[in-house]
Length: 353
Image 1 (cartoon, rainbow, N blue to C red):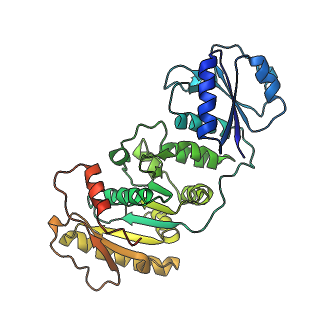
Image 2: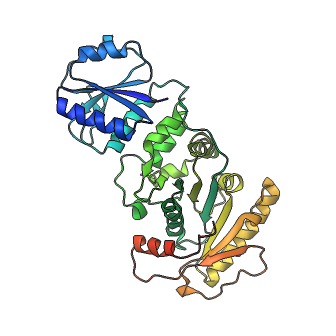
Image 3: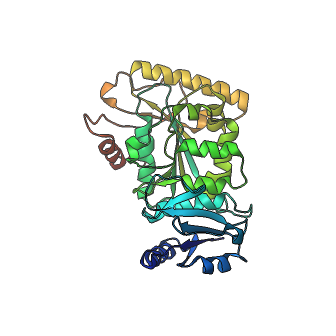
């Protein structure tokens, strides 16, 4: 099903460029039409479904002539305006991809329940990266893995569920929505949560799709096991990703145990090779063995060890533990996060995945 988007504005040049661009770039998702006179819009929308109407805020509108099922918003000149005249606002001048997301967000408020994304394929690989030792470089490795697979032409989703995650450090983003909005939408239990989440999704220039990390760290602590299940089952898996990379703090909280027991194809524990780091890895594996007994899941068999920042190495052996070492990454001095990720992507550590 494609959304029908109707734009009403006196500026015919703007309308022509907008509609032409939308229909060229978003033809599989959206059908755009435009009118310079609201009278033609009233006639068009009275008998059709799945329609969004966006009107220049300076034009007078007779809401009695617009069906209740129509999603309505105002076109505004400036960024950062959420509402105009009591209706949701969409900025006229923004990237076409961002404008589409605003339309999708608006449409989700009144769309019927028959809106579907894609059929689940069950072919995705889910990688969870974590560490019991802070500062081990888990996020850098996770983002490098996601970008490497995306640059290989794979469809990739990166989920940052760290307590104090900061996706902007790795993707250099300027975004309007974040994981905070995702969790709010999930907890609201509205019928069209998948569509809402689609409008919050970000696309990095490497091809990685992701949600920006929470605006307030408190929001991620509110994430429940039910929230995780809805995000994964109702959105992530139906999107048909080939790779899903989850970046999450090691924790004894129920939500972490839910994620690690149910979803990963492989689990990557990250150690800096130090004595304390390896000691914590051993304790982590002991926890996995207990979780296996309690939850009847295979954790040890899925777990691989990655050594990172190996200039600190004291002991590169996690003794008497039945896990395989995937590889080691050297330290890259005073390089930036982006430079480090580029170097990691050039190495062979993730080639076999």
